[in-house]
Structure formats: C-alpha cells, structure tokens
Length: 312
Image 1 (tube, one colour):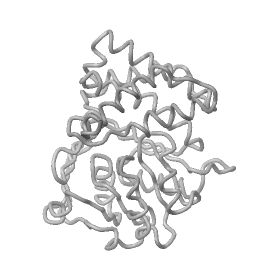
Image 2: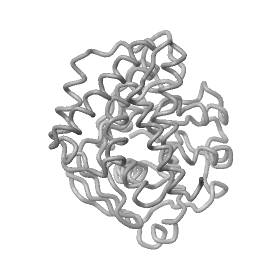
Image 3: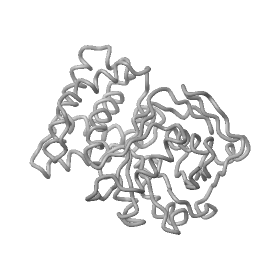
Image 4: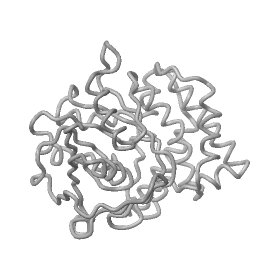
C-alpha cells in the first residue's frame, strides 16, 4: 500500500468526500477545517455515498495550518473566492517539497497555488461530481465523482510518473480517476457544464432538473454550451462537437441537483464568478473570440454577487 500522506485544505462537499474516502482506505489524511473543526474533532466525519455510507470517528483535524505536518500531496479544495488565503495555508503542509493538487472549478485556477509553491509542484484536476455538505462534518454524495487530473505544466512525455502514481492512490480509495496530458482542454470541457448550469441555476433560481425540463432554459443552456465550445477551440482546446449534446444528456440523467453556485448564492456566500466566467471570457478575448451570451450571464452574476454582499 502506498504511504502517500495527504493534506486537505477545505472539508466541504468535495474535500470532505475525497479526503474521507482516502482516510477510509487507510491513507494518512490531515484536514484543515474552519467552522467544522470542533465538530469533526469530537464526532468525526459522516459520508453518505451511493457506494456505501460510512463514518470516520477518528480524524486528523486541524484548525490552523501551523499544526499540520508536511504532506506528500496537499489538495486545494477551497472555493476560488478564498484563494487569497493560500499564501497562509499552503507553506506548512508543503514545506518538505510536497505536491499541490488543485481541485477547483474554473480556468487558470492553479495560478494562485503555483505562486506559493512554484508551478513545477502543481497538478490540477477537474471533478465531475454531485455532492453537497448538508451539516457540520456531514457530506452527501449524490452522483458521479470522477476526477480527471493532469500536470499544470505539460510534460513532453505526456503523463508524468507522479500524476500516474497519484491517480493510482485515488483509485485505491475508490475514486474514479484518470490522467490527461492536456489539463487546459479538460478544464474547458468542465466549463461546458459549469458555465450554463451554475450560472442559469442562480439567475433562473432552478435546479438542474428544472433547467432541463423547461424548453426555454434548455435552449439557453445549449446556446451557452455551444458558445463555450467555440471559445475552447479558439483557444487551442480540440473538443469533439458531440460533447455539446453529451453534456445535455448527462445533465438530464443526473439526480436532481442544486449547483454549488446556487447554494452559495442562497446562503449569501461569494460566488466563483471570476474563475468560472471572467477568466474564460478574458482568455477567449485574447484569442480574438467573443462570448456574448456568457458575458451577459457573467454581468448578471456579478451584479447578484455584489448585491448579495451588500456592496453597491
């Protein structure tokens, strides 16, 4: 069994699930928590998942990065709106040269971690996951769960040994994981879902099931997916056109799900507007490609974000 040790920065719907699965499989896992710290320290983690519910009664929980040991892999599972904290959170668990795996939504989200530890120590990953945190230390995994990971700096030989080793560790923990040599393309593929269904779920106040069941929202979703697809290809990501319909089909088949952005909005938390919308728009513009429908949605979400925070 691999002796890889993991640090999990953020114990929410994503970090709690994947960190919990790694700990259940016998890996040494250290969780950096905020509001959940006391609860998890006393009561552990509770994970509901289609693969079988479980509880971890003994968890390495930390309220401060200062108490975390150096880890082989530190997983960034925070929302990108909290990336300003990484200069404080990452140095200790990565202090002996450990890798950073950035599991965040959006484009160019690895930049903040790379600024702390160096780009050569960063990998990124896209999580195709339906999971919610429903209470302190309590995660409910609803559907999917696959991770596609890759090197932030592409390797000439394709899949690096360390990426393959990390994939194998995640598979041991029961996490469906693959490695792709083109992380940028994978991020654009995920944006083909994130942009329409995160954004529309907020401005139309609807679950994925409601969006797919209504002819008008379905037209909007398809228009946005097509626009993201065009932008991705303009930026050098070669994505099969069939993924447009497949994205709709997968969403129609998934369990009724509230997007993470809608949950953040309803709970008056900052939404990941820049990472998921602003960054792709700016990247596409740099390649001479406009995204007018995405930009309209971006401006609506930016307004709601400021309004939710009480800003003018």
